[in-house]
Image 1 (tube, rainbow, N blue to C red):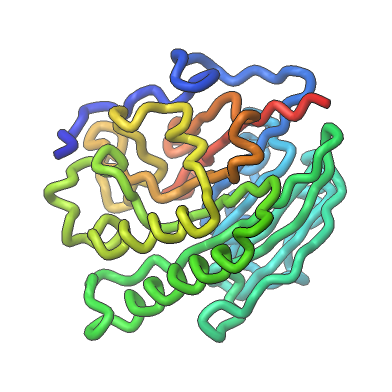
Image 2 (spheres, rainbow, N blue to C red):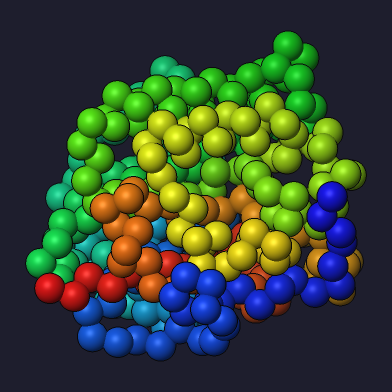
Length: 297
């Protein structure tokens, strides 16, 4: 069982498990950031700070909570991310892919028969390579981990199943793919503040963890963050708004993920979870996750 820790382990490292240290820009690097922003218009100031701190080439947002025609495109472009794929809904869900480089938008399925802004996809060519970005916002699943009693939980499991089937159908030639997003599952014992206490709590139940692992295997994905940061380290990306002092209690969960296909694994250079963003003014309850790839020609 993963013991509760008074402070999350340092969430930055360079090279496969070679130590810790800040991410610094180098020629040929390609940075992908995933962040559940919890309303893009409400947190534009924090978005500016994230871009200035992490300097992403591609930034995948979830829970943008804005219809496409109201998305703050000019404000985002002014941050150096002029290329966008936006899939929004009013005051609910919504995803966006923002990029320094031109994007080729890709078609997305209608997940669970709904058009609720939970998936965006695009290709970007950088450093002589083409990388596909798949950005997801998996349903949270409500409070009761019983698909018979809770339609929201049933929707979440179905969504994960459909994702797994879709990626399995593409598995013959996946190419260079990054899967980013709020997947709303904390799979490892060290991805939650208390494995024992959260086994029956939505986001860490065995049925969800099994579904997420099936999804990961369906696309032959590798968890890029855990490729860098050992499984033994406590690591979170979400802390509830309900906590009186989120940092002191540190009851977090790692719900936000960046996965890569085998074609990109040798390029994974470093990873960071921007924990301090949770303490900014008007924060999201999620913090950004960043993976740096070395795409030198």
